[in-house]
Amino acid sequence: MDTTTQVLSILVLLIGLIVTAIVPQFVRRRRDSAVLRRQAAYAAIPAMATTAVEAGQSMIVGMGDAGVGGESTLLAIAAEAVAYHTVAAAAYGDRMPVVTTSSGTGLPLAIEAVRAAFREHNLPAPSGSARWIPAGSRSLAYAAAMTAYVAADRSPTQVMVGRFGPEIALIGEASVRRGAPFIGATDRLDGQAVAYAFSKAPLIGEELFQASAYLSDRAVRRGEAVAMDILRWLLIAAVIAVAAARIVGAGG
Amino acid sequence: MRLRLGAVLVTALTIGIALITLVGLLGTNIGPISAQIERFGITDFARLLLQFAAVTAAVAVLVGVVNLLGVHLRRTRRRGQAIYSAVLILSFVIVLGFGILPRDNEARAAVDGVQIALETAFSGLVLFSLVYGAVTIANRRPSWASLLFVATVVTVLVGALPVRGLGPIATVADWLNRVPVDAGGRAILLGIALATVIAGVRVLIGQGRATRE
Image 1 (cartoon, rainbow over the protein chains, first blue to last red):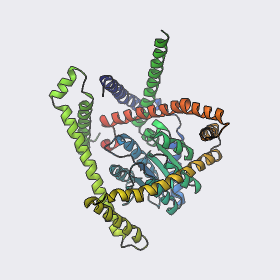
Image 2: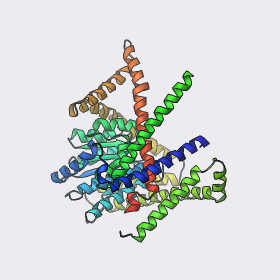
Image 3: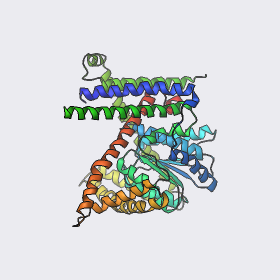
């Protein structure tokens, strides 16, 4: 890593640290100050969970190949948050919700998501709710296994949030063909384009990381979403400033 | 406010290790600060922590494999599912044997003959799924965004056809790929990078759910 990149990385981290530390505390003290923009996918997930519970269908969350220990660690943590809130919303159903992953190091997160969600409702966590499908990274075999869930499990509601490539099309198509609700989001551009086409409500880019802000009632979490919005505007300003400086430099 | 000792310890440990690793990774080549970081052995300690993480991940996978085999061994006693579990265990033993006693790179042959063949077949299905998705999106979500999505997909696909007389469409498809698609892709990636920074900072300051609760 060269010195300029290092200095810029430290600067970005420092700004992120300051904004993330201050803004949520401000929002926590003045609860009404943070109004989040509507997020269709996060509005749909609790409704999908309720419908699944009432219809006696199961809710399946997939984390794909996101796991701990590599560059997808933070994505895996974000996917775990989605899994936790989704399982918590469907914990009262007759059919147990299932969290799947194709990453071996993602399995502890899947198990923790299920345990924490059931603990929140003072319910014992069912065994076998967190499942590892060891099919390799960005695997078509994992996607194929998930389509088998759709066939075997009477059209379950599926929330696929984590690391997926275009193979997410197999899962989305299986859900949509059977009329089962599906929401997909990934950090890969090719997978994201496909997930958008099949999703009941779109979940794109950084929105994937904001599950706790939208699905929990904690003001601190909402504050983090506001912090992200502030950082986004700072980033936009920086991009415009750099572009303007280059144009002026080229003109001069 | 009631504090649990275990939670406090986990949070303190997480913050401490995260800070040391961050300083060790970012604190090289930046003048006099780097010399101090090197002097206190933080860089080496950060590398050691990363090695620990890699080993822990490998052990986690091993534990997962053993657990999976245990589950499938139990399933072999059930009616209906026994055949699948038996095939899985048999495949595991055969491929493991190829790995332990290699004679003619049979493990590679197993991957080429089974895994790649199956994945290639699934790749063909992905194409059909994508076309189906493009068709259904306009029906399910009739909006300007959906129509634009479908129109873009059709234009890019038609533009990629090696047929004479489609020059203008190919030009439009090329422009779509170079300008709006590239810009949109960069915007999404920047957003994900920003969110990753926030998520990392949240873990760093002990605000992650796993450490906080």
